[in-house]
Image: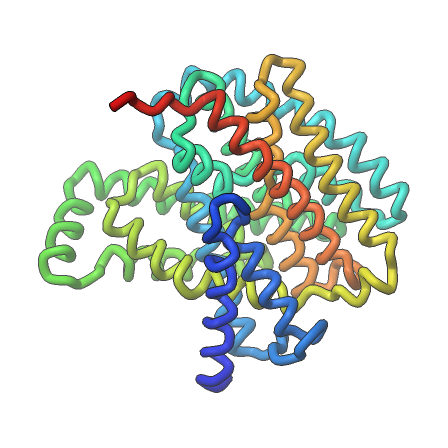
Length: 381
């Protein structure tokens, strides 16, 4: 890869923030990055090749970091979630129960044979999308607290289940590999917790901050890539390694300085590279050649929204139920896995992304309604 090509990829990554800048549009940054990848890929300008080894490696690193950041966004250590956990769990289980018949119907209608994969997709939510919306809109109250464990549980469970669902033929091997990665992530959490109790983490933090060593960032990247190596060795997606380590760090609690550093590395470079790569790898010609795939994407998106609206029967407000249906990490991971391993038909990864974009569009419309209902009123001067 030349520096000219790397500069082009970085410039393409700027499209995301530019499109997301107008608040009235409410577009997530990744939408612009995906569109830039599509435009520069073989579908339009043919300037980017997703199979180029260096580009693919940078995208794989970005994939691991994106999933790590998603895991670190899950408020594992928030004590307020304990009271809200039973209601959130019940609603998450309700969505899963509704997703199974929907997935079977979609797989039968479009004759894809991926009912298990679709059930995982329909059940998923995106903590990485919802938590920034809740923070920026300053949503609060009991219904919002009940939403958090629902989304966190769905996100975590679906990311663990995805490698098993996308290739049922080797589910046993994938399950053993997933257990190995999860066990390593739990071991990392135990080590971090022990280091925190002994004061080692604070010592490293203060000395690194004082002497500008960025030790925490170096250590976290080393651990992340080590877990990714274990995932590769056991033939499991690195998304599980990234997400598992993110959960471990969230449970222990990461310093703000480390969070800013990881944000800069992930969101400033590797994350955009991954989404531009993913956009350039999507086979949109197959969507045009097989209009049924457009119907598949629309069906997945609409079904995901409908299944997440079902907890309205359990008292969840409409706007929050619509927000809970927003999906990103799991469909993107499924598209990336399907592209890399050739487990999905031509054009099917693009259909999965289309379905995710529909859920994001619904959440974008629901966010202002949620803000009106659950954001504190501005103080009078």
